[in-house]
Image 1 (cartoon, rainbow, N blue to C red):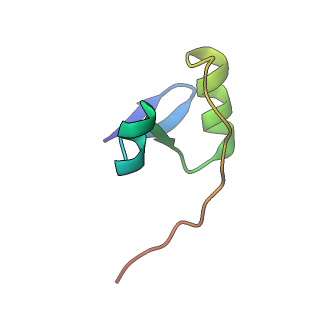
Image 2 (image 1 turned 90 degrees about the vertical axis):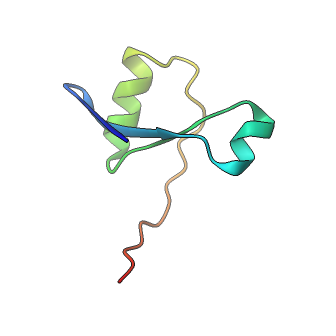
Length: 57
């Protein structure tokens, strides 16, 4: 589910490896949205890792 906020849009999911690490994965289309989320609400936000977004036909 995507969250639309005045500071940006993000999606929060728990991937398979997140459960063991007691973490969640936060996704966004723009790095600035993640940075704004971290500054405003999630001060414990970990490293931002940029990935490749792939579209499937």
